[in-house]
Image 1 (tube, one colour):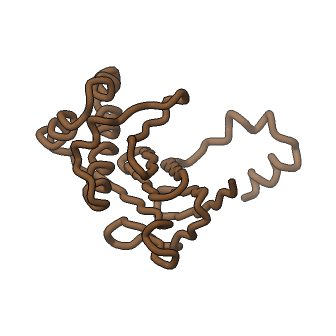
Image 2: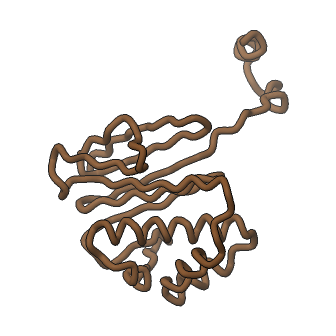
Amino acid sequence: LQFERCILRLPGAHFAVWTSTGARLPAEIQKTFSLVNHSKGAHHSIFVYALHFEEEIPQDLLRAIYLLLGREEAEMVDRFRFTEDRTRSLAGKGILAYGLRQMGYGPKCLKELARDSHNRPYLPLELDFNISHSGKVVMCAMALAGRVGIDIEQMKPLDLAGFMHWLPRKLRVQLQNS
């Protein structure tokens, strides 16, 4: 399989999407946070949905998403220790439900969420998806053909002081002068 990588940069975040279908992704995010490649038709499209939440997500909405999940997935959400982790997990499932609805599937498909031997979630449908979250952003990539992956990591300033003694002298001098 050949994997292509598309890196999307937004202020304070770094988004990367991989696909094995060979579909090319546009270089910018539309205002709807949806990425679609129409050049090869919908069958080879990758759909990327994102949610950026500055304010708290209403508890009734999170509860509604929770109720869409099957028992095992709900138990997995219940095991999160921190509220922020539960919120991001449920937000990811909510984005997945939205994407499924856009593709003609009902959100009740979430009851069929299962995990493979690597703990990667999947649905018994003719599509693949992947969810990633970091900070206040949650993203879901969906593909109708091939596997798709997405990873997001909030970019934070890095204090190199603790690492300086491990670096070669030349690199330390370069970093200190930059």
